[in-house]
Length: 222
Image 1 (cartoon, rainbow, N blue to C red):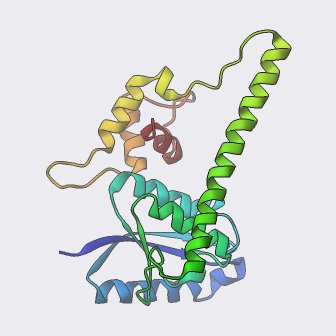
Image 2 (cartoon, rainbow, N blue to C red):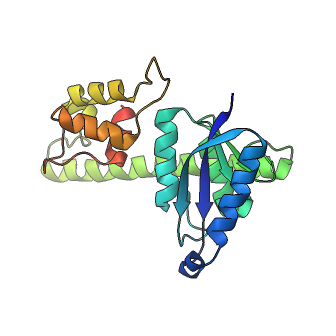
């Protein structure tokens, strides 16, 4: 039985789009997958994205995370470490994000980036994880400070924004139901498929349009 995997490609400049960089990456990944009986179920490609760009601003990487969080694939293939990122900090942060979800990142040469005996890289990974936690805590504190200042100015308490989990429990319940794997096939719907199903059930945006994949991913986190 073959293992399922996602392929991740990245080209760093618009000029590279007309060359064979993506073709080379794809062929290297496919050769490794074929040799190891791995089935590539989907490819994610960040075009003209710098290797130093944070993973949270990469559309392809973000879509890949959405897919991982809903369909159970636990392996990502890249040509080499530089395709993931050229910045050590960005690379290690990407690895932390994947490892926290139980996902392995493997290069076309067979190197498992999520496992290392190098103390320096382990330290960098820990620093990246700590930095990510710090940034999250800083944002939460910043939002709370803004609410407190507004509360003081208005003379009444201003609460944080209520999410869909508080205002539309039926929507959240249906989204989570649709995200479950089929008991027969073992497959799960993609975020876009869930959005379409929600639309047919009457759950849409304020403009009457289906929710985006990003919105559906947020629903599933409640």
